[in-house]
Amino acid sequence: MPDILDVYGLKYQPFQKGILQSKPCFDSADLKNGVAVVTRSVEEVGIGLLCGESGTGVSFIAHAGIDRLPGGQYEVCYYSVSQICPRDFYKEVCRITGAIPDGRGRQAMITAIRAKAKALHDQGRRLILVLDRAENIPELVAGDLPTLISGDYDLENHAALILCGTEKLRSLLRRYGNDSFRYDLSYTYKCRGLSEDEVLRYVRFKLSAAGASPDVLDASIAKDLYELSCRGNCKRLNSLMRMALMIGAQYNRKTIDIEILRSAAAVQEEGF
Image 1 (cartoon, rainbow, N blue to C red):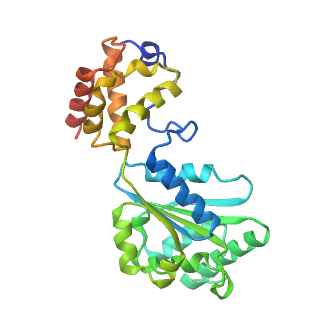
Image 2 (image 1 turned 30 degrees about the vertical axis):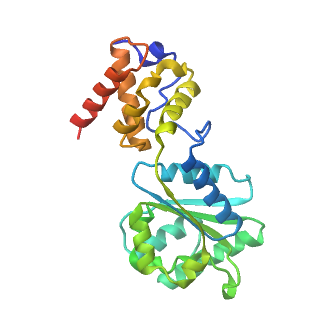
Image 3 (image 1 turned 90 degrees about the horizontal axis):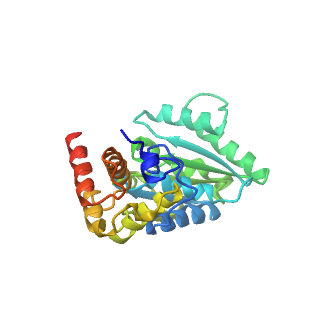
């Protein structure tokens, strides 16, 4: 079977899962708005909320926003939340932040996290706590979130909090978020995926970044590419293009046209 890289003149497979994508990065509307949420929430030392359907790139956008912050000024702690009890949640936050509780129980751990944030603040640095898959945060913790980042007497915040998740996260916060949470919520954005116009530009951008000609993709299939990727779902689009390049290389086809694209989509459907 012909090699994908040779057939399309690629330095690497640009749609492969795990490829570092933040540099270079396609500036979609979602990315620009999501990065702005991260930046402003950090600057205002508040809470930023990014949500969207699975596959719309919420986690990636949060990482891109963090990557664009000035270096050396922040201590970034990232936690992908699993479905756990409140005690284990706080234990994990203590672990990733380096907070050492002076005692047992929820309050001791919250106090330790706040003390860690204050210590960094006093050193001229800022703690940024990024909670991914935040829809899994225990219900009893949701109302505590502002407490984790607040300073003495709640006069200022010593840390910024970035929450990333699906629409379930919004529902969780509506039910259990208190007035303090709403006060500290700086900015919020819902990721919608790539538009029909962005889909074609995104794929060509990725191909060019990997060393291939953007003309590898037939421009006439833009609408089909959008529809077959579940209307711009980034995860589905990357998977679709990985399969399309594999099929195209198998038949030594230099251009990804509608025939190859539909074959790739059919293979994807068989896998579900």
